[in-house]
Length: 145
Image 1 (cartoon, one colour):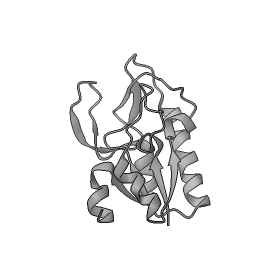
Image 2 (image 1 turned 90 degrees about the horizontal axis):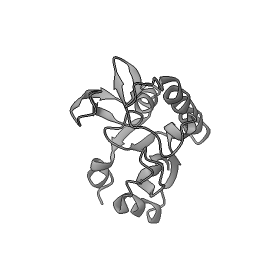
Image 3 (image 1 turned 45 degrees about the horizontal axis):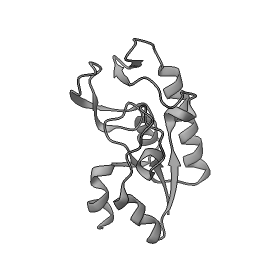
């Protein structure tokens, strides 16, 4: 089974701050025969690493310096969707709360770590194209690890 995975969860240093969110639990899926496909929508959309933190405000992605980077996020999400179709992906494990990958909860746009209901740009596009999304906190229960 092919699974899209936020690259930061696989140890790729692609977060906005140049770090990763490596999940050793997630890496166990490789030994169980899953094909993990790393993606970083923000990089695929042309943003550098490191980059300024960004949050969704009124449907637009705005970085901390008040620059609109929505088009980069949309382009990256579109590229991830192309990858998902190429590899017939039905499941994605994505970084929670991210303006790209968050699903169910994202930050509110104040840069104060306040959560609201909502989806990141890429997660929303994938879900709208019938790809099941799970966050990294649900890995153990979903895969029964």
